[in-house]
Image (cartoon, rainbow, N blue to C red; front, side, top):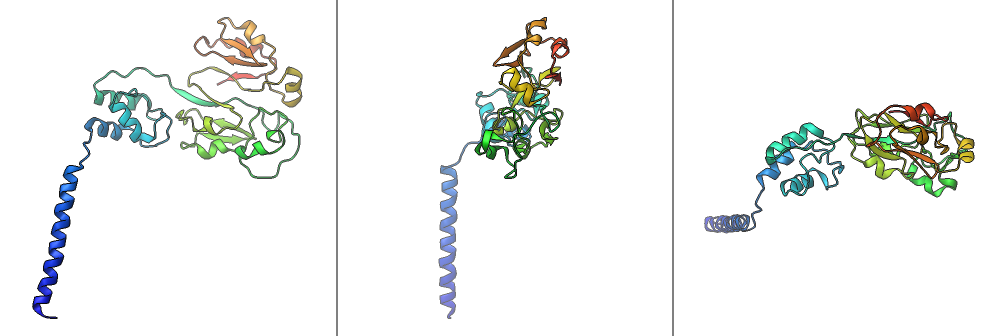
Length: 265
């Protein structure tokens, strides 16, 4: 190959490279996306778990919403109050106090307290048991199935199955809500972290049926409701519920419960 041919090839390659470089430079300027400095600062302050517990698509979605004023500065359940205060400083606002929440499994019907209708041998996934008779082997159709679908989705290792019932470690729980969403029995709810007493049953069966199925199931006797001095307990569909805005933590409901369905949290 002659020297002129080599020089021509170099010139062509160089010219093409120069053209592409100029084109990309112009495109970068023309299509430049303006970055919100506050949004970037908020994103940096967030923990980065991308759990979705705030209701937005990951930490970047929450950061954008906070920067636009569409979400409170303390919306991150994982970061809690410390992160909320940092973001409040970035946004130049006051951080409102937010009650800490934790997940709670409304069932204590473990292997020693419940009866079984049959022995189940199959896929160990609570979500799949909706396809088997009575939605699971336990006689109580409202009880925890114990196969840990909630355990699998928890990003904080805050829930484990003990003797056939899921149990939440409230110190680890960040109230992201993933376990609440995945439970096919709707047993898991978010309650105040400092709640003193909980109704550890979600059965809506009549008393005689519950008594046959579980030794600690709520039978809807209403003794808790009748004796609560702050009228914080209601019984609906044979199941007691506590209104934590009214509850004063006296413990009378637990003392009066003949089935030990109400326990300390």
